[in-house]
Image 1 (cartoon, rainbow, N blue to C red):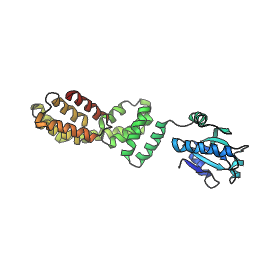
Image 2: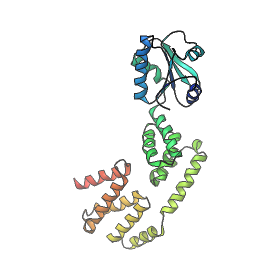
Image 3: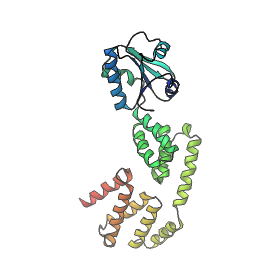
Image 4: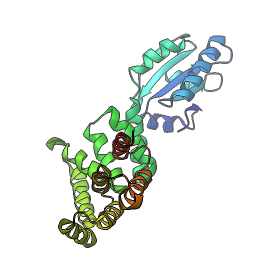
Length: 280
């Protein structure tokens, strides 16, 4: 729903229904009242900048039935609508700081808005767009209602290590059917990542640990299986001893994996810092 709209008899039910999910601010105004116009401009700017509530404007010059329904006695009047009913409000002109103070008691936190948007994106399988929203939401709230969708997005991107870590931290009370489905999804992903090629290379390397060609091949296979933590660990262990190992190919693969993981990846950033300590 757009952040600012005109409330009419035609859309009032839609707006009331929307208040079941988000805060609606009703502003009753009239062009005949200069205070109304001033307040309306203030609320419009706040709604457009905030994105945390919808402003429904009621022009009492043309929508008297709505004003009568809400028993409006004076203009301007502002009401906060939640779950289909008024829960707060004020009459007369107010400055932005006072309005913000009143609304803050009722508006959802930013992480809740991010979570709501991310869930919609997950339902549409837009995992790339959902992941940063969930990461930000999780930085503000580690509750299961955030952690589980975050795991869902991580699994879709193949980040099995962090996904497993988050699932391991879910309390017994929150291990619902969603948790169980994600647990099964993780188990399948881990099985798929443990390929015969990787097992074969690990066995060869166990008997020939100084073979840098095997290290390179194993790290490449691990990266392709989204097991980046193991790939980076094995490569970094070599770089700690010899930065130019295998004519610089070990270092190059290490850097390529970091680049592929992206700037926002916490594991990649951890290994970037480790590399800088070796370089400088």
